[in-house]
Amino acid sequence: SSRFGKYIEIQFTTQGCLIGASVETYLLKKVRLINQALGERNFHICYEVLVGLNKLYRKRFFVDEMSPAYFCMTSASGIYNRRDGVTDNDTYMDLRDAMETVQFSEME
Image (cartoon, rainbow, N blue to C red; front, side, top):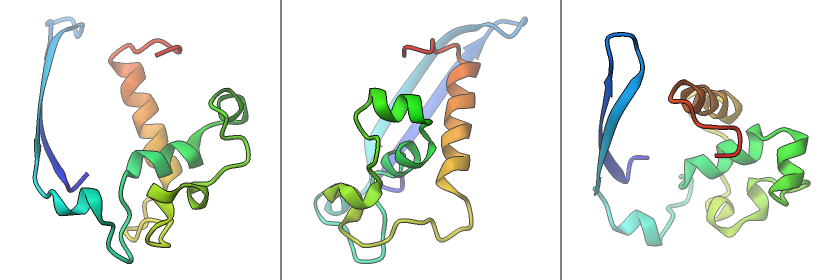
């Protein structure tokens, strides 16, 4: 997100096993959290999850027939697609791959 800065340090053993991590988060812009500008998207993960979830998870999370247009926080600007040509489904899959890489369980 362009509103937050994050510094992530991940430590691995020489065999590639995760042994530690730390994340520092800091707020860059307060105004965008309370007011979404026309033509901008906020809460990018929400768009990605709503587009990327398969039918089983959509049902499990009670968003079966819902899209980003359904929610106030993702519909305020009327913009649903990214302007850089990257799809929300692709970034959702990247997220899932990253979670698998750091060994999140299916339940997590």
